[in-house]
Length: 523
Image (cartoon, rainbow, N blue to C red; front, side, top):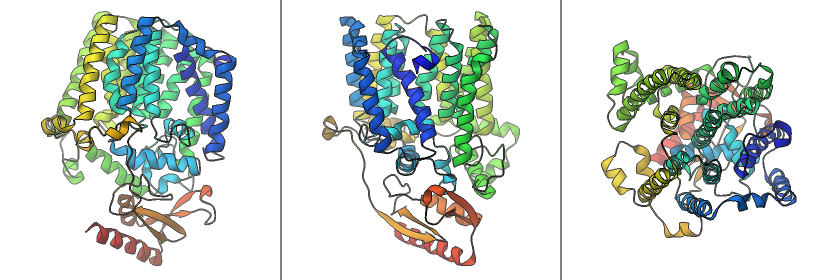
């Protein structure tokens, strides 16, 4: 990658990050044609080990002083321990694992969003995780590896503020959540830009890559583009690599979802495998209800006045309202900070963040879509004030706090019951010392509607270890409401993809039997 695109930054962490970018793009292209199984993983592992020893990359580790080496070792051990806990993010069971199973068994399947709309995301980060999930990382702890890389970066670049973020990010180490890489990569890109990195071509390409992992990061390619033009005075030629990545992202989305950007039904090319409009409408309504933490029905929200939209968002029950208020206050404080500093780069950062924030507020103002903004604002405002000693003290204190929460989550559950994620933490298990903790269920029923035979988890809402093809019960109910059901384009080959089709009277009877069975078992 460095031979092709140059150096994003020096050091072992720079090589690994460049490798992540290149390998993910290669695997994305491969996944159109073949599953990301062991036949794809093994050659990449062998090739990586070959160049690691051929180019003597292990010598990079000897550049650390004893003091830095000790700090890195503490970071790595902390990350290993935090990453060994049971996964607790609900998307791990309803979205991450099913996505990885489809990628490793079939690759990118055309129209897969018709089976389960969330599968239409197929994040590039999950493509990267899928490529290593056959035998290198069967416990799906790629995020823990990324945190290790991030700690190496902080020490190599002598930018110690990153160590303050590390303990908070430990909360993402148990699952392949795409939230973690976009936060880490955005902080790395910000640090490189503030430090004066002028490789604008690679910075823009990497920013587009982050956007392709999670489109709510649209502010990052906007930032690098505006900086390239107004700060570094470059022409548009260096942006070519980023545009290629963007086109690959659009192609991937059209293939699995039917539209260029998930979950927005904009840019209709009229492909036969796009989701039924009624299903998209149901999803849009659900997103609006999630904005208000499911505390209001869709009909109630529709009756809100303009003032009610704002007031009710700020006055939600529980911790969500506090996060929303803090978000708006942070934007106001950062805007004032930008006006006082009057620096061109900081101004562009502020404009980019504000544009992203407005888009999130318009489409679905859920706190998980603007979490990265807190990290960015804190980094820009304080990076000059955190030296090594201050950062190490904060790192040790916060790490102790986070590990305590993970080990004994009862206090979090007692004092912040509205923070629902905390209720799924199970605490320390002695077995995790030897092997990362994972859940197993293996209870499912098999049904058939039309030409599509599928599995449904038995008395459980998610299909995390149900053999594919699998459908979550909630999507079966939604399909029934819409009067459609996913069907195989070729009944003999799942890889040919799925299309939505209006159910015949006979298929409606079959689908109703499935729903009746699910309801009976739930009793």
